[in-house]
Length: 420
Image 1 (tube, rainbow, N blue to C red):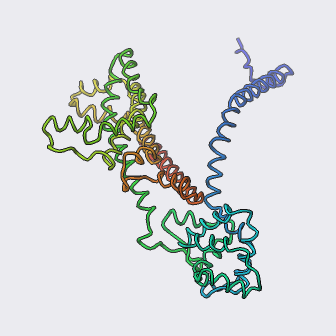
Image 2: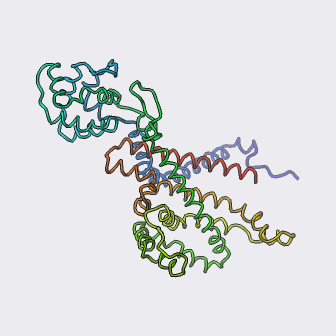
């Protein structure tokens, strides 16, 4: 008896019916893929307008420098070829007055003055004084003398160097400043003086606080997640609701509650003094202790959930089998159970750490001057200094740091899976 012929045999494929069947299957598969893609289009559009475009704008603004080149085009052209050491030619003074007289209103002069003031302290009053002194008439030498009579600082090359250095629409100065670097008058990159270096220390402080918060969250979350994973499903679900309660409360409300609890006459200090552990209130507010306590409380659920989801998938029979083969219970737990929860540990630690390095509200309300993280200075440059370039440069630094950490996590995760 001959075996039945396969549907994919050459004879079947050669028939018109087989060709039509393949085409029908291909069209059905294409329609399925397009339907699936169509369902994802709203999400892709949402991510494009709420995530990708803002990130692209942030990165572009970190290297954009429009204030000087837009407000002082003739001055920038007049300074082309200037030696940057001596006072510029009278034509530069005349070009400056011409540019200032063409500014629409004082707000444009204010934006220019703020930008130059970040390069040369004192430039703000210098620019605004010249703007208020307009109109100035006469030839270039006369205008130069009138400006010097108004303020003799116009003869200082430092302020003209600031204009010349920012004569391009695109600059890396903001990114360099976020790394405590700068360009000198000749355009060479150098480290800032020690008394002006700030952001590298702030970045290290941000990492340190985030690392401590992550470790404390892991120490507190691991036994709690393990206990929840061993409970019956109904009890675990009820207790999981309690874990998720902080998600339903505003961060400002939780921070305000910690201010009440941690103050000198608060519940925590009253309990410590009532137990006789100390005879005076502890300093728990407006320092790093209060910041870490509040951040751990807020971020703890983000560590518990990944751990719990992984632990629920680990069969308890593995540890019992190791014990039955002669291993001590603690050794069996450490060598058999814990390695299987590494994915949950990695995911929870990465999530908590990345959320921590972007924190602003909690350190601003509970911390002191030496406890502010990088996000505080981003908000300051955005809302107080109105220096969008520096704010976006620090934001770009935080973004790159987050991507590097995620890349390291992916590399370590792949290595662990390969070893397993």
